[in-house]
Image (cartoon, rainbow, N blue to C red; front, side):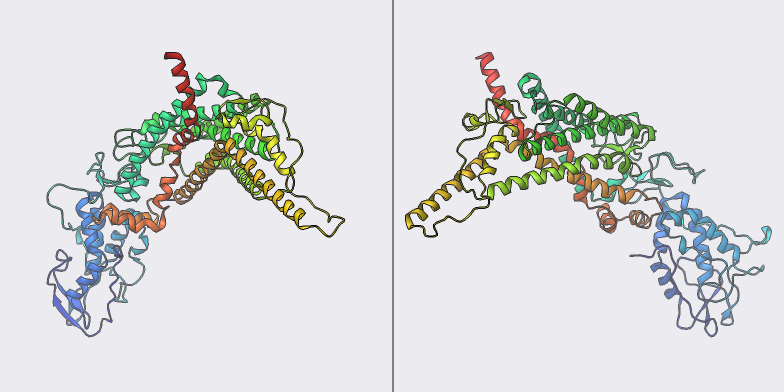
Amino acid sequence: MIYYLGLLATLTAVTADTCAQYSGGYCKNYASYPVFLPTGSSVSTIEGLLKSGGMDLLLTVNSSNIAARSCISAYLEWSCYSYYPSCSEDHVKDVPCKSVCLNASAQCQTLFAMFGKISSLPDCTENLPGLHVPYGETSTCLGYIPSSGNTTAVISSPQPTGPITCPSFLLPNPNYNPSSPHSEQILGQMCNGPCCVPCPHILQLYDRGSVQTLSIIYQVLAVISFLCSIFLVLSYIVFPQKRIFPGSIIWYYMMGVFILHLNQMSVVGSDGFRVSCVDSITEAHQQNSTGCAVQTFVQTFAAMYLIYWINVFMLNVHLSIVWKKDWFSERMVLLNLIGLVYGLVPSIGVLVSGSSTTTGFNCMVDPQHVIGWILIPLGVIAWPGVGVTIFTVIYLIRLFLSAPGALPAKPYSSGKNQSEPNGSTTQEASNTQSAATKGVPIRPTAQVGEIQRMESSIPQDQTKPKNAVVNSSSAEESVTKAAKNSKAHKERVLGVLKKTWRSIALSVAIVIVFGSFWSFNLQIALTFVNVSPTTPWLASWYACALQGNSRTVCAQQVAPNIPSFIGVALSNITCGIGLMVFLIFGTAMLEDWKKLIVDKFF
């Protein structure tokens, strides 16, 4: 890495040595006198040290950034006078004025702070680097101006020829005014003089090709998921029996999914940043974009609302399969009220706090507020749902692997009419096998009788028979019966899984989606919550761009300090929820639509 803002030269003692004429280089506008060269040193050696210290980069910044020129001129003057003191009779004659050092330090505070290199500014209270003598304060010191006292004249540093251009992927700042180069930053912009970081800023930290690919995938999935959500919502409207509990839970969940994807459709087309960017260099915030504020409110509500209902669904599946309980069916009014409050409170809180901002492809909540307003409320509801789903899956696996002893004499019947989330019905649990053969899906609660039968068939503590001797035919008959019982038991478990696989599959899929979304958004928030232009790794990345390096090269340099690009992609995984639900539930609904169309038109 180039140490671009620190001159690392160390000169030897000032005793013996030589005087020489400056032969040309960085200091041609300053070193017009015989310069002092320590023993074993030369002008070319010192020029090499200046180059390795980053002088070329400073001159590159000087060419593209008018606002930085006063700093670079002052810093160049200090460097030249410090490393080329005047010489007489092979000894140091004059050293730079203290005012030269003070001027360089004052002029460069802002620029060096942006690069995180404040420590590279000269300390004017110390001795000159390498010479071990203090800065001069007499009329003979280098840089002294008689007409105005011990002050420093700003000697023009090398000026660019032709129009000013921004290096690498940086864009021109249309608001830059050369007569006021130190004007305040505009909200949503990351500019330094006439050059700015493109919007959205966070995505500029990653490889351009990867971001473009992700943008295409995101938009395609958003469109497909939106269309799938329309189909599913219409299905629940056209077929009222599908809204019978527990199908009503998925109905409310799909309303949240529909709202989410409708909101995401705003990014489709253009460059993918229609709402998240005010223009090519300005990120959208609540204060400068009404659309950003609206998108944040809607997206926050939709995310909270759909997470709430899918966790109600997962808990209902768990209660039905594991505990044989039907707790939610008579409490839907209360559940609806809680769901609305749970979705609205964070959404309103985000607007009140003014924390809506660009997060990449969409507007969401800034890193300073996203943990408190979004991630913690989501986690309180969703992580217990994740645990419940994992427990349910483990329970079914254990049930499948358990070896039964003897079958009960009579099958258990729940005696109730039950329905699955898609709204289909059956008479009794004893008829589930018949219903399955006809392709009628059964909700998990319809399997209460089946699961109780299977659990009752799991062997309990057995006592030894009175007769210790068992003939061979009886033993063979016992083994055969046990094998049949084991096969029948596994067939019953498979029957339950066939009738409830959609519920289990949706629960498991949501666990994966939520876990990815929540974990990587938390990582992103923790990474950027305290980042500022003076953060060392960000300043280093910006310096990489100022050197004219490509976005790919700069992305590789900053990669150890930011979340992986895979993490960024998975944090946007919500764009595929509608497609996921369609693949699990929607394919079964196609038969209903086919039957409706045939009955109506043929």
